[in-house]
Length: 290
Image (cartoon, rainbow, N blue to C red; front, side, top):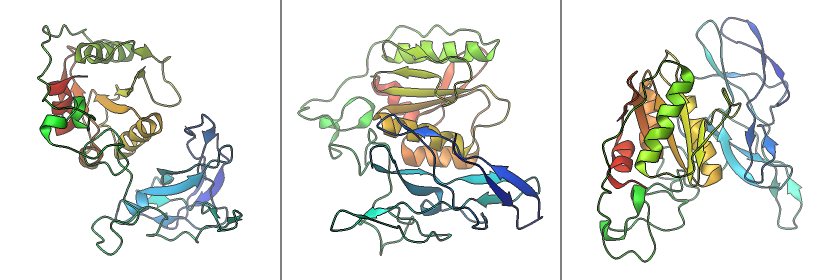
């Protein structure tokens, strides 16, 4: 668990204690963004891609990666951005130098959306397995060279026809655990093998894992949020895996828009246990399979 910091809302003066979420680094070490003690929180009035991510350095392996910007919701309705200590960078001599001071709209390695002056220098991170990703190992190709799910498949010369599947046999959902089992059955029907179910309420939020797959099942009665989608995508990015989200209540508009941008397949499940695609990435996954 990351170290907590006291936070006072500048809108209403209410005091809070904030503890940052911990995620696994690619090396396996638990890592949380280092909070900048004493720095006042910034109210969020307008979201941009740049402000949603910070660069964090893993002290175990030295890797620099993008992590969700810590945020706190106050009871008065304000959403606060918690300042993070800038990640150190390596100088030409190999020594670390402090990163730039954090600002409300400037983070290293993450250009703002729609800023042509910065575009192309440090492209925003995307799902490495989704077409158009600047971090994918292979550039997008024509349909003749597409692989399952739409990402580039080296050496492909012919389009892959959709797999022939028997009708999906759903599992009626009565409990939250039933929802996870129903999602596992659906992913197996799509072609994923050796699916592992995590224990109930995993700290990571990842309910299902398989080779090349991480999936989350949200059984709550509120729509899944933007942060839910971003955190799942981050787990998939670290594991070089497809991220798939299942929700029983649907998705907030901003969560749906971000998932479309990141290429995260979204499914909505009803109590019969039958997932329905909720975005184009989900349609693509159904059409091509694994």
